[in-house]
Length: 431
Image 1 (tube, rainbow, N blue to C red):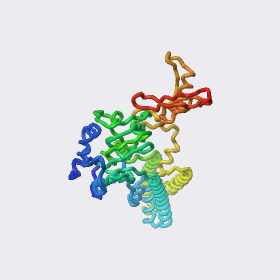
Image 2 (spheres, rainbow, N blue to C red):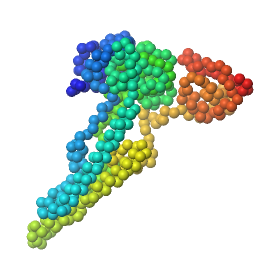
Image 3 (tube, rainbow, N blue to C red):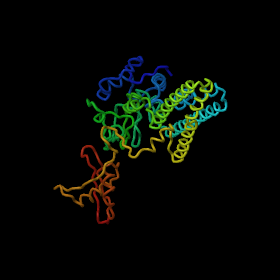
Image 4 (cartoon, helix red, strand yellow):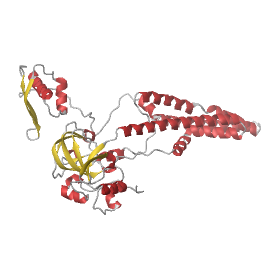
């Protein structure tokens, strides 16, 4: 794979340079005509060849929102050694060894090594478990390669690939629709809107993804129908990848990390002040200088909580083991403390707090008055329709009583001309 991989994967031609491919197009890709998009991607409606796809995957990297890079063991060790409390312990151990107190120095070094080793090993197991979980749910996509439909891993998709999607499929990348048959797509993960969106080929000058009805986006789910699309963006260049990239900034320290850091800095200040005060007092009293330094060292070691890092690591590790038995992987031990301190967890996707579910709150007739008959009829429609159920059907069926003596005689499925589904029902139970 190339040493430098651009984040944006649009082709100007087969001979496009990395620099031009790295520049994000403006306006958005869904505002361009299908034929010009295919030309720009150096692709056709019958897909790419295996050779060309291999060249592009080598050049532009896998179709992953964000590459997961493990921290090196040496980096993890250095990070933990730089923590104030651990640094204080190391200083106390070095001074103890320098002044002949080998046993204290060995104990402190042993505690630090055991604590760091246990924490790094626990995080290594968590990272391994997370990777195994990710690989166990690896997705495949139906892609046209060499003119035939093949199923390949989603992370092998490249710009210019033609993907076929059917009901239940997860859209693997951002692309422009080539053809579609009554396709409904759930884009709640991207827009926060619970209602399915009807997609269709054609031109579109919309500025937001919520109005881009001629495009499909990574992370959306096909509810019904089928479609073919040409992949325009992969990996971090997708809308979903942009969200992942925004969340991939340096991790902020947890509350526990900040608390331990503040405690360590406080202990360092206290130790330095008291040691300096003791040495000054001893020298003022004309005590031997060596005796004054030894007394100050004993005071410093006594003020240092040698077992605190070990106790903290062991406690959090036991919590991680208990969580793992319940199917929860804790990749960072200190995050367990913050999780346990939560009272309410709120998530925000689009500026408004939503859970992507529709709830039935009222049912009125043509005059605007609450009507139980309207609820019954709506329940019959929602329960007896044989087509794809929408979130609105689910919301009605959750409130409306299930039909007892009702038989479905005929049905007019939902279509985008009438924008409704209709059922003919015999409510006498005679069929």
